[in-house]
Length: 177
Ligand SMILES: Cc1cc2nc3c(=O)[nH]c(=O)nc-3n(C[C@H](O)[C@H](O)[C@H](O)COP(=O)(O)O)c2cc1C
Image 1 (cartoon, rainbow, N blue to C red):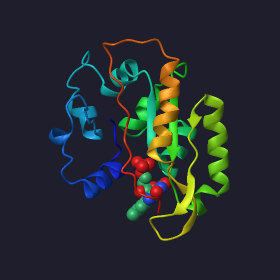
Image 2 (image 1 turned 90 degrees about the vertical axis):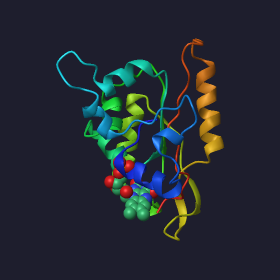
Image 3 (image 1 turned 180 degrees about the horizontal axis):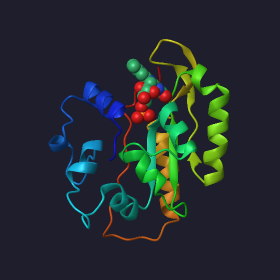
């Protein structure tokens, strides 16, 4: 599981017990700090490159408007966006956006969605419901069951390798602001 700082903060707010050590065994949580703390000298492994090589599937849930814009523009200023920037698009990359309706309906969102669609990124669209800010509208992250179903379907088409486990970045499951 790779988190950006804002997602990490909301994860800790919602689940304060979720320190790295309290996650279920087999789930590793990587943060931006790990990028530099694991690299000391030329020749050492670089975390985002290792994760990009290791992963069979990438799921970004929730995908903020900010990270959507960064991916569409090719920016890579944290662990997550560096993995995406190095991604091999023959492997599935899913995104489940979550944002306020006003952000979702903004013309920038359409432009960015068109760009990531051209890259082959698979959109799991947001849903309409009461958002964290109290507004009612489209923009809430798809139900986790829907995300799970989409990813499972994609997994069925992948060659099976029992030495690898599937790690899916989880959402804090908050409605969008
Ligand atoms: C309480 C709160 C809730 C937020 N919810 C969202 C959200 O659901 N979607 C979104 O795109 N941005 C939201 N934002 C703004 C993001 O936190 C901000 O754009 C941040 O830079 C996103 O970082 P990321 O791209 O690393 O996720 C929220 C901000 C606050 C303070």
